[in-house]
Every structure is written in C-alpha cells, then in structure tokens.
Amino acid sequence: MNDSTADSDAQQTLESEKLPFKTKLAYGAGDLGPAITANISIFFLLVFFTNVAGIPAGLAGSILMIGKIWDAVNDPMVGLLTDRTKSRRWGRRLPWLLYGAIPFGIFFFLQWIVPRFSAEQSNNIWPLFWYYVAIGLISQVFYTVVNLPYTAMTPELTQDYDERTSLNSFRFTFSIGGSILSLILSKIVFSQIADRQQQYIVLAAICTVISVLSLYWCVFGTRDRILAFEAKRIQLEEPVSIPFGEQLRIAFKNRPFLFVIGIYLFSWLGVQITASIIPYFVVNCMNLQESDVPTVMIAVQGTALVMLFVWGALSKKVGKKLVYFMGMSLWIIAAAGLFFLQPGQIGLMYLMAVMAGFGVSTAYLVPWSMIPDVIELDELQTGQRREGIFYGFMVLLQKFGLAFGLFLVGNALQVYGFKESVPGQSTLPIQPDSALLAIRIAIGPLPTICLICGLFLTYFYPITREMHAEIMLKLKERQEMKGR
Image 1: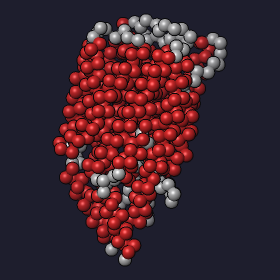
Image 2 (image 1 turned 30 degrees about the vertical axis):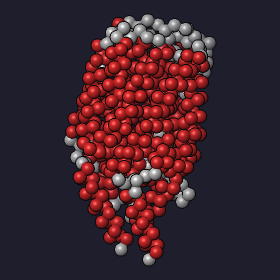
Image 3 (image 1 turned 180 degrees about the vertical axis):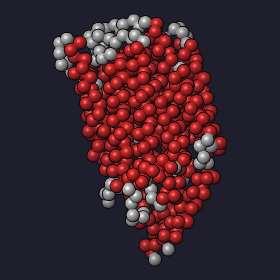
C-alpha cells in the first residue's frame, strides 16, 4: 500500500510539478557544447576551407555535404540505440553524453588543423579534401552521440505543455548564448592573432574545453530527474517491442510529425544557409573587415537570445503558431532588405540583422516545443514512448536538406566564379560581380523561399493546446487503469 502511494506521488510529481531552476539550468547547459561547435562550424568552416586551407568553394561545399549526409544517416541508428539503452545508474540517454563528450571535443578540434601533404598547393588540395572528409565523418558521429540523446530528454524531464516551452527556452538560451560566446571569442582571438590558421586553432581549442565541461554539467545536473522518469517508464512500459521497420511506418503515418519535420527543415535551412553566407556577404558585398563578421552575427544571435524569453511568454497567451508567424514575418522582411543593401549602409545592415534575430529565435523555439506533443500522440496510439526514433528521423531529414543547401551554396559560389585564397597570403582576392550576385541571392531570396514554406506548414499544424490536453488526459486514464 505504501509503495503504491509512493509510486502515485512520484507520478504526480513528474506530471504536475514545475521543474527546479537548477534542473532547467543543467539541461540548458547540455546544448552549450553542441551549439558552440555547430555555430563555429556553420559560421566559419566553409570560409576556413576556402580562405585558410585553400580548397575551391565547390569542393569545400562537398566536404560539408558529405559530413551532413553521414550525420543524417547515423541519427536514426543512434536514436534507436538510445531507446534500447538500459542503465540503472544513468538511464537511457545520459550514458551517451557521459562517454561521448571527450571524443566529441577531440574530433571537433581536429577539423581546424591544416596538414601539409605536399609543398605544392595544387598537390595538397585532394589530400586535404579527404582528410577533412574523414575527420568530418568521425566528428559527426560523436556530435550525434551527444546531441541526439540530449534532445530526446525533453519529454522525459516534464510532461507539462507550457513547461516544455519554458524548458526549451532555457535550452536555447544556452544554445544562442553559446553562439554569442563563440562569436565574442572569435572576435577576441581574431584581433589578437594575425595568422589565420593559428586564429582557428586557438578558437577551436577554447571551444572544445567549454563544450566538454558543459556536457558533464548536464549529465550530473539532470540525472535525478531522468532516473525518476526512467523508473516510471519501466514500470508502465509494454513488454512487447515493435520491430524497427514497423516503428518507421508508424512514425511516418503520424501526420503532425510530418508537419514538424517540414517546419524544422525549412526553418533551419533558412538559418544555416544565412549563417554560412554571412561572412562572405559582410566582407565581399559590404566591403567590411573579417573582424566585423562576429559583430554582425552577434547582432542576430543577441536579439534571438533576448526574444526567446519574450516569445516563450507570449506563446502561453497566443499559442505557438502565432508566435512563429510573427517572428518569421520579420525575418522575411530582413532577408529581402539584405539582398538590396549596398556598401556604406552599415546602420541598415545592423537593423536587418536585429530583425532577422526575431525570426531566428522562433526557429529555435517553436519546432522543438512541438515534437514532444507528437511523441505523446504516438504513445497514445501505440502504447510506447519512442523519443529516440522521432528525434532521430526529424534530424535525419533536416540534415539531408542542410547537406543539399550547403552543397548548393558552395557549388553556386564556384560556378559564379568565386576565387578561393592561396594559403599564406595576407590579402583576400577580389571577387567578380557574378560571385557577388550569388552571395546576395544566398542571403536574401533563398532563405525567404524556405521561410515561406515553413509558414505554410505551420498554418496547417494540427496539435493545439486543447488537443494536447485531451491526449494527456487519455494517457493518464490509461496509466491509472494499468496501476489498478
């Protein structure tokens, strides 16, 4: 009788109690490491390949595409494995963060080294290409190992509809904060070190240390809450598992899940295409210095960080859909304006960067607060919680899209005559008008198309607050019947 009462109390606590501030803080810290490394890679890796390693833009885009495709392929595998992981001491997700953190940091750092395979630069290009492909593939494996289990922890920490939005606000506070921190560090490092290659090595080393430590903070700070959920899940979970092929079929028959995949795909395609082209736009189209690039990016990410809290509070009153529409509309206006900006219009450039930040924050917040609702609908329909498979395939399709986007940007620059740098030269080559037009298209019309597609899908997304409440009520009734 006492055990039954204790189990009931634990279940009630998990469902209704607000998460402690320290738990939200620790959970948010888990995205700091992946965010720092991912943002440094998004903002600077293509530029690093073309302007430091001396790799042609088309080949550089191909390196990123191969890495992203492999990253997408390994996501469902890791997701399935995390769903099946059994550890009384750490639960299903935390062992992956615990043991993957250090290898994750090491292989991220190795991406920023430029080995010399030949004294002749022309003979060095293909060995460098294969070096970066190999390191990129391994690096993406360990990124998935720590990041995918982390993202799947959201519905395990709380089942409250609004509390999840709050939890994701903490997560993306650290995510955007990590991005801003990495940009501040890059500005400091770039201003203090003249040699381009040394700049990136020092920056990568600092980011590696911060990333590993933040992952351990997450592991030890969320452990108690995760283990409490795990005990409840094991008690209630059906003994018969669904085969992998059947899991895929059920997942892709979940209509709201398809909407979330599409919304996330188009949102992040817009984010990452913009992020990868901004350094070229600032330097080549606006005629500013490389040291000005982090400042522009901070304007975007700083605004996104502040607006996370505003959008999070507003979503409780007007809903996730309207918040997404408001943020994305401002970003679309900014993207259109950036296409027409001319050198000397620096004030307007920063104004549009701030406007874009309003939309970027909704791209972070809204899709990730939708996916746990989808998981609970699936639990109602199948009787099983399968966070890993949903998060894995959500990210898989997103990364296939991003792989294509990065490949498209790199090859478009090369086709339109973009000139890569020669390693060792202190000045950057002057770009032809055709390359400048390609940069403008990549920062304006291309993201705009993606954002409009995301808005269309958001309009038809079916799970409302009322529908979610009904799902949770039915799940609670089912759990009470099992407990009798």
